[in-house]
Length: 294
Image (tube, rainbow, N blue to C red; front, side):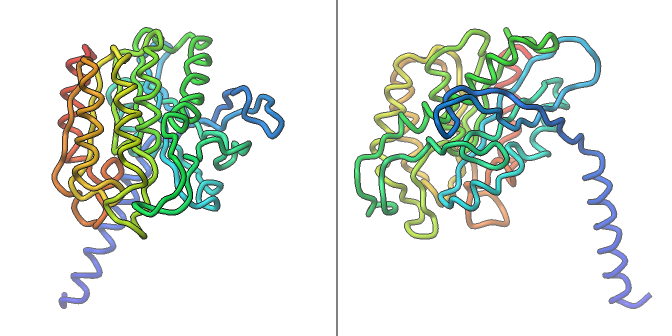
C-alpha cells in the first residue's frame, strides 16, 4: 500500500472512530422549565432545558449548569446547546443528573435579554459604568428557577446540588452561590467573567476592576466551597485579572481554590478551557467533587 493510501486509510479509521465515540455519548432530554418575569411584558416563559439523567429511578445528585454569553445578538439567538454534550456526559458518568437551561434572551427560549452590563465599547475603551453584579443576578435567575423546578422532581437529590458555570455562566454561578441556596453544596466557576472582547482588546476586558468589586461582595456572604478554573492563555481576561477577582472573593473567608491551568492546547484562546481543556481541568474537578463527599 502506498503512502497516500495509508494516510487515507488512517483518516477513514479516525473518522469512523470519532463517529463511534460521538454515537456513544448520551444525548439530552429536552424539558421546559418556567421562569417568571422574562417575557416581553414581564410574564412567565418556559426555558428550553437540556436534561441528562442516569438510568434508573433512584434519586441522584444534580449539576445545575449555566452557559456563557456571546457579545453578538445573532449568536445568542442561535444558541442550541446550553452545555456541551461531552460535558453533560462527564457528569453523567459520575452519577449526576445535569440540568442546563437556555436562558431568556437566547436560542429557542427567546424572551427579553436582561444580561447586558450597561456599558458600550470594548475593553479599556468601554464607556459607562459596568454593573456586573446585575449581570450575575439576571443570569442567576435561571439557576433559581432550576432549583424551584428540581424540588418538584422525585429523582433529584435536592440536598446534593452542585452549581457549575462557564464564562458569564461562571459569574452567575458565583453570584448564586453567594445566596447559599438550600441544597447547594459547592460551586465550580469555569473562566467566569463578563465584558470581554478578545477580537478588539485581547486579554483586557471592560472595567475588570468592577468585577473585582462584584466578586468581593459575593465573597462576603458565600458559605459553600468553590473551585475557580482559568487558563493562562484566556483571551477574554488575561492571566492577571482572574487572580485579582479570586483574591477579592477569597477575602470573605469561604473555602475556595483558584487554579490557573497551563495554556489550552491547539488554540490561541484559553477561554475554551471547558470545551477543549479537559485534561487540564478534570483532575482538579475530580478532587473537588471527592472532597465534597461524592
